Image (cartoon, rainbow, N blue to C red; front, side, top):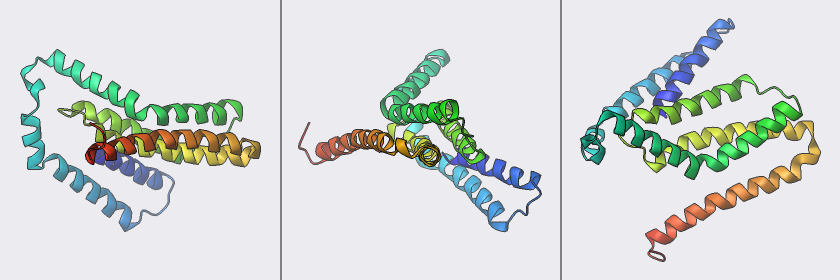
Length: 187
């Protein structure tokens, strides 16, 4: 997530510069701090310890690529699927049906989500928790586009709320299952 945010924040600085607006000091400072934090997290000693404990280091390159792609697809279908499904629905309604523009901020958020998800292919393993940042970015785009859809068509408020409640319930199921497992209620 860190390198993806760094790249997108660098793109935002270039867009601000291209539009002739003033680049604030906090733009540069935030970008540099994001880069520094990303390097520190990647270079942390714990990463090398964790990487050395991965069993797939004994496999060939082709098998490693297969296992990484499998882990990413599993994470996309297990954890990102509701957010991706909701995003696809909102994009179809807003762009195809209502002909609303997606907007530059949403395109940047989608790019950041794609980068954060795709960057994990370089990781020695794809932990389930790594999908959280990508999911959060997708949900931000869904909320932004949903607000535009509801402004354009107020009669779509009830269906949007119903779908959001179903997605929330699915997320709470995983949280409840995790808590119940930690407390020993279920095995």
